[in-house]
Image (tube, rainbow, N blue to C red; front, side, top):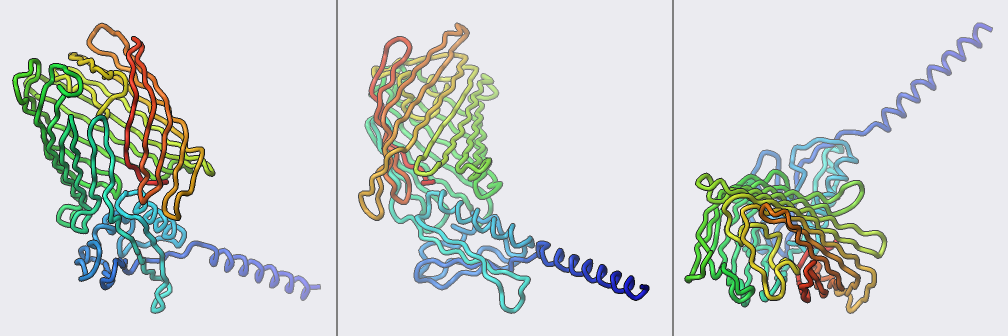
Length: 415
């Protein structure tokens, strides 16, 4: 009897030890990132190791290693469990895809034979070698997403009412710094026959890159009127611009948030302008949905063009004839959404998607509290190139009956 009890006790202890061993095996084992290797074109692989700066660009490489490494949520020396490492590798791959600078990207994790607790990361990306085209009312634009193989971009626009150039470096001197400079010429007389006239404006800003898709830029910008158009005046402004994008939110891809604050002629007139924009992209099976929401506020002696400008060509509130508005107080909001319902495969690399779009905006100016509103709708076409090319055709009408056709072309990363 006693021996039977002893046998049972030994069996229970054995089962307990087995359970503990199984639990230990199932617990996440920590691994460390030993190196990150970048493959590009016919060049030799570039390897980033712990404690070292970004590697130099090898001969024959299509782009500098920092063009992809600056997007990475991983660094050599990071330690984490295997599932977290795999999730961050997938996030890095997705970030490269939606950046608009690469047509294809692959990130995979390899186990080192010398030490099973160490991992290497290999990233292979194909740079976008074609410009991104877009435009607005009476002008066209082009973006070069990778200038000199680095994470820099050059945007130019030209047309009947606009000419501009913007240069942006997202990894200044291989440091997490963002430099943004722009220069533009606007001709409102061709567009609205209003008082604003012709103007030359520009600005420069610099600030830290807080994460691969988040930056905070501060600087100065100003404008100079050209010609003798009445009502237009020069200005200067201290501004701060916060851009944040998140690829996943509650399981939905593509939330991008942009916040902008500007103090114009500050502190002489204490004018202030605030703007914010949020973009949400989601895909439910074959249906893709995009929504853009924006709001803004201004107060003080701002010139009409500096009041509230979510983007060039504000649907029907500007009107086909143009309705210039000068106000000391200004606030407004805008919503733009569309869905891709029908898809046509034109080639192995080209797909045409069609679906409805709807948009609207509301503005309140001065102290009269009069609310101006406009709504519209139409057809949205999307061409799936390395980036998505959206073409909007529609009609918009304001509450006073003014209306006009809307035509807009813009480029955006694909889901």
